[in-house]
Length: 196
Image (tube, rainbow, N blue to C red; front, side):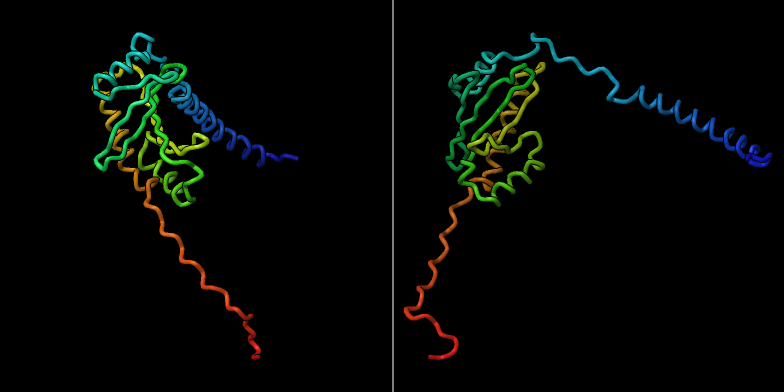
């Protein structure tokens, strides 16, 4: 079935494909060895480098925010330049690896579709602070890595969060839309398009 020419072509092909195949395999091993997915994951910071919820409360107090202890966190209030007061829930995630900031902005049933869409699109703009649903409300949430964070870093993260709250106000605090005008009253006699 295979003649001498076909065998010779087969050997030439095999001789040229085999080194290529081996180099790809070796390159594959080299790439796999340097792949970030193959590297050991960074271990979480030891508990001694993480803030406790009590330490978070003390820091919030030192910022003059007068935190109110609730459940597993604190509520802090801040007023923007327009006089709007924001309530922000500050807590730690279960593993204490992140400090969470969350503020309910609008009842989800009172938001129209365009407002909700605008908030979802804005998630890309605001980066780590994101709009999401808490079930009943649309909230702005942000997580801060709780690994050796300094007081100044925490202050800067809070400032960035409050700035995002204020900057995003037009998305969720739109002025009430004027009601549509009432429809014209119906004619007393049905309109007959064919005459009387």
